[in-house]
Length: 180
Image (cartoon, rainbow, N blue to C red; front, side, top):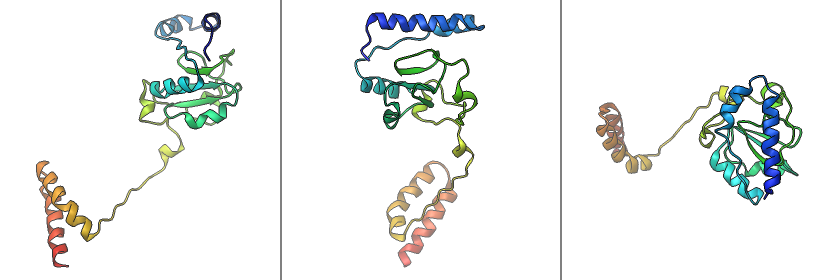
């Protein structure tokens, strides 16, 4: 953290070197023009920036990286430690960036899915994962006292939306609770 201008220049040079080694360098050059390096003073400041930015990919390449994972609130997928490679472009990296592996384990082999939220949508959504294919059922139970409190408001809202059957279902039950 708090990298010197010389170190930031080395990072930019490394990104350039890796880009030039790729067959799709022309496509990458367009992406790089939309990229930036954000200089921060502390790891906490970097994590705060990342949580606000909500990257699709987040690299935690620092000492005791796994201890920082609970601080991450918004990211599509987090690559933890120096042996969990992800490409450098299109990522938010916290810590020292080293040479990345040509084949990213997260895309092909480590078990996470590559269908991730982009454009900051990691603030609201998760990447596709096994939970995406599990069925979740919600349920609710309202007591007579609860319906007495909520019912009149629910009926008004249903009437405003033109949903007369919803309003009637509440009014009928409200009539029953008053007889109890």
